Structure formats: C-alpha cells, structure tokens
Amino acid sequence: MTNEPVCDLPGCGEGGTVVSRLSPEGYLVATGKKAYSFREAYRRFHYCAGCHEKLMGGVWSRVRKPDDKKDGHVAPTAI
View 1: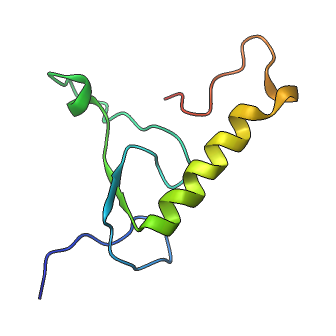
View 2: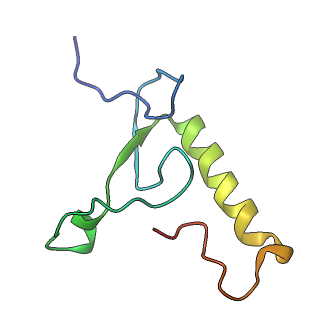
C-alpha cells in the first residue's frame, strides 16, 4: 500500500499527483496561521492532472470575462 495522496476534488478518488494552492472551488486558500514565508502561508491541495486542469480553466475563464471587471471586484484568486 502506498501513501500517495488522493485528489482533493470531491468525488474524484484518483491519485493526487499535482500540488496546488487552488481550493476545489478555484480560489487560493490561506491557512489562517502565522507563517514564516509565502510558501507556508497557503494551504496546499492535491489533484489529479485532469481535475487541476479543469480548475485552472475555470480561473482563466473568470479572469478573461470583460463584464466582470468592475471597481471593487475581487480577483478570482483572492483570499
């Protein structure tokens, strides 16, 4: 038995080979704890390659949407 992480996207169950700071909802997630560096400041998730690609596609589609760029609107990767 291996200790390979499982994909964090609910319902997937594949091996989590990609480490990412994107939550299953497509946002960067802070740990809420004091951290010594930027690397430690964000929670890490594991995804299979297919699920990570879908999450990244969702982020980029929100970033490129021109009608979603009003003043005061937070970025899709905001904490």
